[in-house]
Length: 392
Ligand SMILES: Cc1cc2nc3c(=O)[nH]c(=O)nc-3n(C[C@H](O)[C@H](O)[C@H](O)COP(=O)(O)O)c2cc1C
Image 1: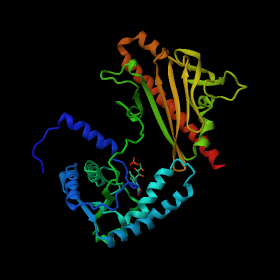
Image 2 (image 1 turned 120 degrees about the vertical axis):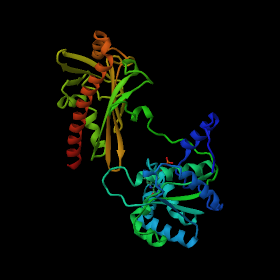
Image 3 (image 1 turned 30 degrees about the horizontal axis):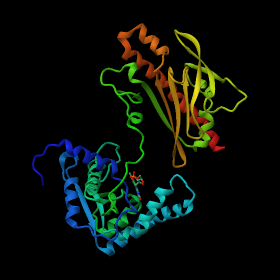
């Protein structure tokens, strides 16, 4: 192993490439090219550098190369869920379904698992106590992922798979894994066909990173105390047991939010005879002590039925605030995300800051908390309506 080493600036690009492009490789696993054992051991040595609770050596790695053993594992994998993936794929093949590509790839792996040069199963001594506290898995998952990264750096690939865990006891029997050891992941290992892989589309960090408090976002980079210029915002989310199409009617009618908000009193579409869509406007009434009542015109700036409903307050080019509902499909359910961003245009918030500039951060934080509470009540209300509508 290496002695003391310092990161070199040139290595950043190489590391970032590996981090950004270590994909689940299934169809591009080279089933014909052997993998030498030392390469796998080198990757395990690197993976073992990952942290472990109590600094104990508790991870155990199984490398399965014997064709008979691989066949038995592949049979279990298929029975435990692989066959279901294959038939799901057959159901959507050629339809352009949003999961078609992943299903095609997962079905391919299920059908060829016995042919991969090596199957690596990562395990750990111990059984999870179900307490919800960090413990068992937290000492092994990071290591298994390091193994995948080390493979990628060497032109090999893998796919993180867990279907076999539905039949973990059968796998224990085949491999002789003793009681008290927990399997975490099954990794098919092979050289990849070509080494060019792309980064995947993922939610940008700014949208899923909260600063100093759950749900508190910033649209712009900012290193000092929180300021209005950083584009502060609030994001709240809720999981709804209904499909996105059943949730959509309740997010695309702003007037409804008045039922649950302390501040928002109601809204009317400015052109009630036209179906709302991109560019439509509505007038909203608001009330807040000690400011009293005020109205605002809002402009629909994104309108994708079943997906996104967004509006900008006052001026769409320089809004006082921007509000957005996003419906994220989950299996049979929907995660509803409700996000708002203050500014960059003027609003009640900018007036409050202008009146008391020394308290900018505190004023913004208080406003974020008020909005978060109102927005959370709105999401709970929408969930109630959508789930009852879906149950009908
Ligand atoms: C916890 C977990 C379990 C998974 N189980 C399986 C599995 O059993 N079979 C499979 O083919 N892929 C499995 N995957 C891989 C995902 O389907 C994969 O991450 C997804 O297709 C996205 O592809 P990417 O990793 O290339 O971004 C699993 C991934 C995770 C994180």
